[in-house]
Amino acid sequence: MRMISFGLTDTGRTRSNNEDFFLIDGSLLIVADGMGGAAAGEVASSHAVKTIAFLLKDAGALSEEKVMEGMRQAILKADLQIHALAEKNREFAGMGTTVVAALHCGARLLIGFVGDSRAYIISGGSNSRRNASPYSSNTGAPTVMLKKITDSVEKPNPGIIRRLTDDHSVVMGLVAAGVISENEIRSHPLRNRITKCVGSLGDLEPDFLWYDIQEGDTLILCTDGLWEMVHEELMLAVVKSSVKPEEMCRRLISAANDAGGQDNITVITARFSAD
Image 1 (tube, helix red, strand yellow):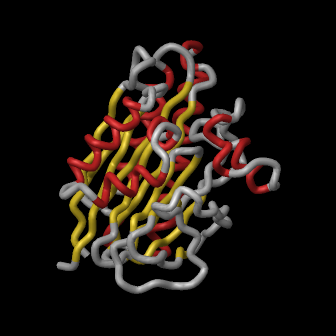
Image 2 (cartoon, rainbow, N blue to C red):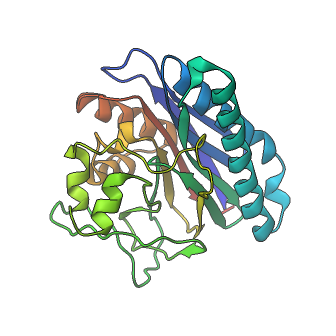
């Protein structure tokens, strides 16, 4: 599968600085959303992305098992380095970052994630499979909580958007427990409380999944500055009505800013086609 990708970041309407960071390096796509005092969030997100990218430089040539372990080790290395920086420099105390990374491996995607930055897939394939849990363009469609997946994700029906990753957050835990619905996440007072971040993982681990790519699929990686402002139905409409990944990114960021732009906004889109 051939991948064409584009990424864009924006400070948003209310923030004075941008703590997000992203990278596109060949087959590797990474988005991070930093947090911490002063400029600490910017340090954490940029350091994590650069460290992961450096350590995964030649990962595309490895076996699937080794690729996953390589991404795991890269994220854990970034975690240790950010933690050490925070311990050494008082101005960086408490800093950390989310990470969502996708590595294009032939006809599959490996996605690793920590925190509440997300990966979505918009299916362009013609084959549907059972047990898909999509968002459709119908605003009344039910939202289905994805189970934790560590190996592979089944293909959704054509023309729908599906969240692949599970947020590591307090509110997603409430969704899993049946306390709130997923539609209530965006307005919940604890929506920004994450339960895992790179920089303070400790004994916790990143999560991973494999996704089998189909012709015409579009991948979205984004920070919460996008998905909190732009609902999945609008993401789907933007992608379906856009020709190129660059157009998708610009229109998605404009939509987030039009909705208030309450946080930094970062998005990478990638479209897949047969060689």
